[in-house]
Image (tube, rainbow, N blue to C red; front, side, top):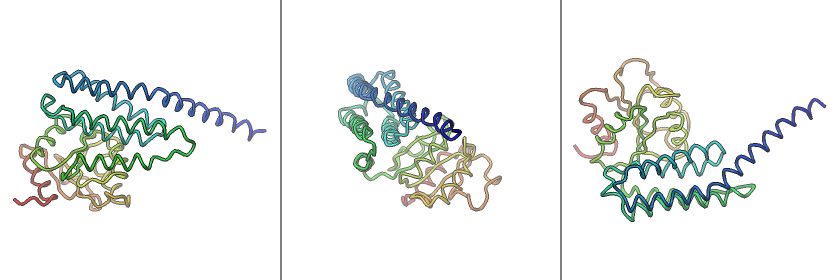
Length: 263
């Protein structure tokens, strides 16, 4: 009797979660239509910053919601969608039909994921393969790097420092979210601050090194004002760049060394 009573609340909870997931999926086609409309509006009015901000905000929100409901492939698509939006330095010159088509390809993948998620044993393999194909097409011959930094100003400095190099950057401010991506997607280098949350930089490098993932031995660059304290040998980054007036130059030199650009 006690066993049945304990199982009943669990069964009710699972049913509730499934219903919430079903509601989420039922609303997704409308959200995809709204994303497509915003992409086209931005293409027609590239100078309108509010359209860009609305588009970015919706993609970011969808990424979180999909993760909450366990549809991680949609979160992955949104991660890449955010990366593409983050490459825009000058909206008036970079937002064109090619940019719109690239954005819409991500919306198409989300729609494919909606259909796949309707099945009891959803198979997202084709979507993951297409996502990787799009990534390779967009990155061309660029090296792929991740920047994990809670400060928007510091993130912008890193981005500017590497703007002349053949690199494509994914910009994140949450170390746990970043680690999740690093365990799944291949990157060529990692730039991170020491004081991150919820995992600090030392803990993140340590977790990455013992993970056995595709990035377990990737080159790492830590940006810190305190280079000598609190970094054990097993978690030492390949490069340490101090937070000082030479940061941008030293960071660029470190990346040049990693991707073997002659000095």
